[in-house]
Amino acid sequence: MGVIIDCKTLAKNIKEDTKNQIKNITSNGISLTVASILVGEDNGSIYYQNSQEKLARELGINFNKMILKEETTEEQLLEIIESLNSDDNTHGIMILLPLPKHISEEKITNSIDFNKDIDCISDLSMGKFYKGQNSFIPCTPNSIINILESLNLDFEGKEAVVIGRSNIVGKPIGELLLRKNATVTICHSKTKDLKAVCKRADILVVAIGKPKFIDKSYIKDNAIVIDVGTSSLNGKITGDVDLEDVIDKVSFITSVPGGVGTLTTTLLLRNLCKVVK
Image (cartoon, rainbow, N blue to C red; front, side, top):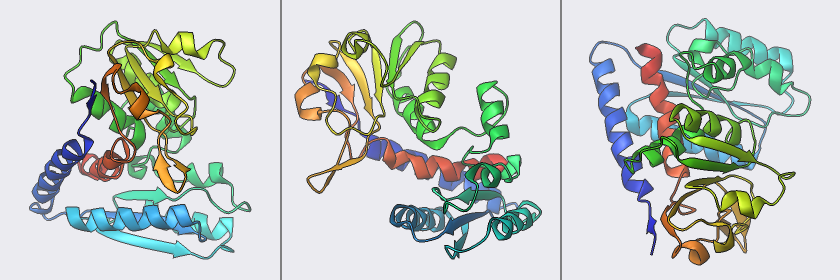
């Protein structure tokens, strides 16, 4: 039987390490501050911002919680971001997405100072990331790679398959796996014979938003499976992988909930330490 990866303990260890880094920074007279901007009343964004605030305060980070009205104009939002860019006491800036339809997401994300873009959402940040230059790492792919590294894997030559080609998960985790010298295939809705491709995977990362889509018929014996999906099924948060069906075939697997998501916000806020360094 496969092992469900203990992501909660891993997250706890990362949190303690981050807390110690922050203590070292504050002992030198620097008070870390992050600004989180929410425009409108998207329920998912409200929940995420509250989670950010709770963790930031737990870690000893000042949290500038900015909640703007739905009718806030693009020009007003740009002015706020510019003021945060020029504020030496603000070390990181986060924008909660999606934005209201009358505001250009591209224009807003690209207005964030590269050195404060801890969520790695601007074109400049992403460009530097894909070129392997010094940049922040998108937090969900960073969580995945931290989980895989915790298994003490030898990535070199391993066949990794990623299902999903989004800019926030699929593409960047493909890049991080390439840096580890894995052989990477990225699949999507037009991939032919998806099942056959998946059955080649030593490492399978699933991020498609289809609850319990992946069953044991997609899994190679002793594969490592990372489930990034978070869909609602019968009132419960459910992953893209049918854990009960595949558990006897995998070597390691993440659960949903309690998996990748347990690390993401901590790793995002840990980027503030990198800003200071």
